[in-house]
Length: 348
Ligand code: DAH
Image (tube, rainbow, N blue to C red; front, side, top):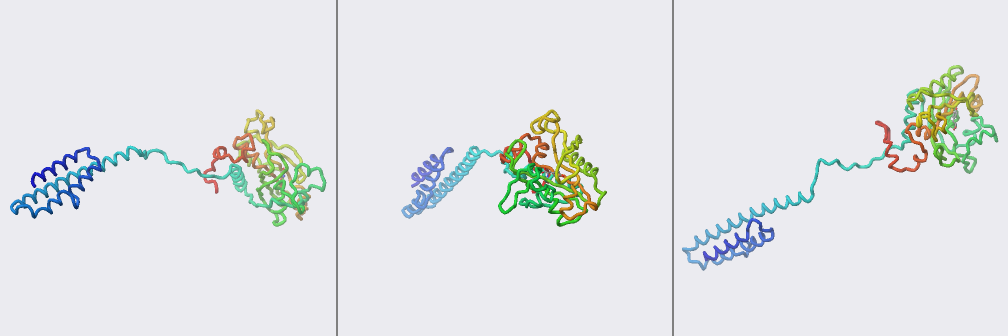
C-alpha cells in the first residue's frame, strides 16, 4: 500500500513538471484527486488495511494530497500568468496613440460667409428680415421701377412659374416686402436665395445668395455720403481691404447708381479669371433709392430718402476664401468643404 502511494506521488509529480500544459495538469488533478481518483480509491480500501497501519497510510494519503494540490495550484498560477503575457503580447495596446477622430460636420462655407456679412451689418445697426423666394412680377420688377417690357428686365433671365409667379432674381424684392409692412426710419438687410437662368460657371450659378440692404429716413438724413461710409466700412471689416472704388452704374431702382469694386484679393491686382483680368472685382451694386420705388410702397419721395445695396454672397465668398472657381461650392466634395471649418463661436 505504501509503495502504491509512493508510486502515485512519484508519477504525479513527474507529470507536473515546470512546463506542464494546462491539459496535463487537469488530467493529473482528476486522476489523483478526483472523486473516483487514485487517492479516493485508496481511502475506500482502508478497511482492508491492518488497523495499526491505518493512521500511517491515512497520513501519507493526506500528505500526498496536499503536496499534489499545492503543486497543481502553483502550476495553474504559472499558467494563468503565461496566458496573460501571451494575450498582452498579441493585442498590443498603445494608450499614448491619438484617438480616432469622429468626423464632424460644420456649416457650408457660403453660409458661414453670409453669417459673417450679416454680423458686420448687424453691428452697424441693420436688422435682418427674411423675405420670400417665390415672388410675383410686382415685387420683383414693377415696384422696383422696371417698366413693363422695358429692356432692363433682360438684365436678369427669369425662371417663370405657373400662375404668373416667378423665382426672385434678386433680393431687392425685400425692399418692397418690408416697406409694405413697416415705415421708416429703417435699416434692414434681407439675405436669401436668388435664381437666374445662367449656366453654372467659374463666376455664376443658376441659384445663389444675395444680401440686400437699405436705410431710409426723412429726406436729407440719409445721403450718398452715408451710403459710401457704410459700404466702405463694410469692405474694411469684411475684407480687411481699404482699396475700394465707387463706379457709376445703372439700376432701375436707384438713382444715382453705383457699383463698389475692391482691389482683387485673389490676384492682388495682377489680373485673374475672377476679376476678368482687370485687377478690380465688383462686390456690390448700390445707389439712392429711386423715387418711383418709394411711391410703389406709398412713401412720398419728397418726405423720405434712402440708400440701398445688394451683393452676391458666393462671389464675395470666393474673394474672401481665396477660391477661383464658384462651382466648388456646389460639388459638395468634403475634401473641399472640410478646408473651411466654422469660425470659432460660429452658429449651428
Ligand atoms: N438687385 C441687383 C442685382 O441683383 C443688386 C443691387 C444693385 C441691389 C443696386 C441694390 C442696388 O439694392 O441699389 O444685381
